[in-house]
Length: 385
Ligand SMILES: [Zn+2]
Image 1: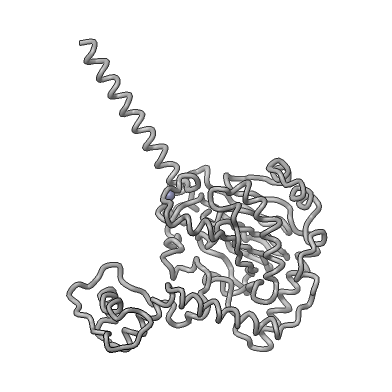
Image 2 (image 1 turned 90 degrees about the vertical axis):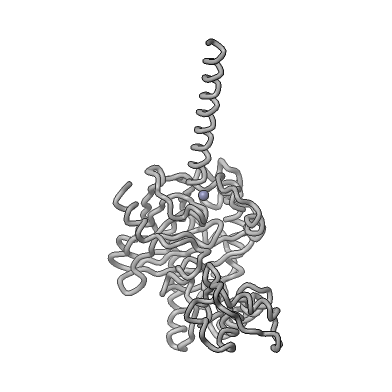
């Protein structure tokens, strides 16, 4: 175990799904209620209130039974306060809550797009020949595993790096983001940051780049992911979260160890001048094993280079070391598959991608073979005596 490995274990947050650790996307519109939580085990001594006299969007019985799961401090407050607390939790998980959230986010985007004046209009629709380097374009037009492998390096299993964006495109996108941030600052518009881990950076989809990034996913990232990440929905990626993150001493400095809320993540360095800021990777893990130890072959440190992309599974544990000088901006595309997410609910075997599940499976097989051998030896022994 390296020094990094043991450091990692202290810093490792719980898995994304346990919420509140900063791995998921910001849930717009939930606001102050985002932190509302329930306890894991019910307080059986608590006598719940009755909600049957109220007109509610959920069954009154649901509120009564949910009460036992309220945090201790919430048990003694008034019925109305408890009701609001539980309502917001339920809304987060109900189709109605989801619908409201989506609607509010659409309004938020619309407000930005109708007020913000883009600097480079040509960035907002896909111009592949102007965006990508020729080697990348060639590999994609050939569209075979071999043509992809020709432009890629796989420095550790499941991590692919390749030249992707033209320096000129990187510079333009950077300047556009700066222009957007100037507008945000001048108009005092309150923007949502890309995720709960980064205080700086911007969601590209929110100020008009959604269509272009959709094209990037459909025509470029999905064909590659279909070949390299089929077991995590690589061929059915159908939505994305596109954003930039900014690192430097006057920005976010580093990023703790985490997994992404994505099936596949594309991470491209847009520049400019910086030192430090290496990415470190520590193996792919399912929810259950997100904090398990790193095997030595899983350790990888990667230094960013302008225009060069890193493609990996969202569940590949990683973090970014401190950017010690200058400013570093990276483009991130979290690619998701709704089909895969639906299937995951029923499928429990992660051994096709989780390093720890794989290790456990091999160990079980080894033990079973050993037991069979033992059994055979015993039988042989009996037969000869
Ligand atoms: Zn696992």
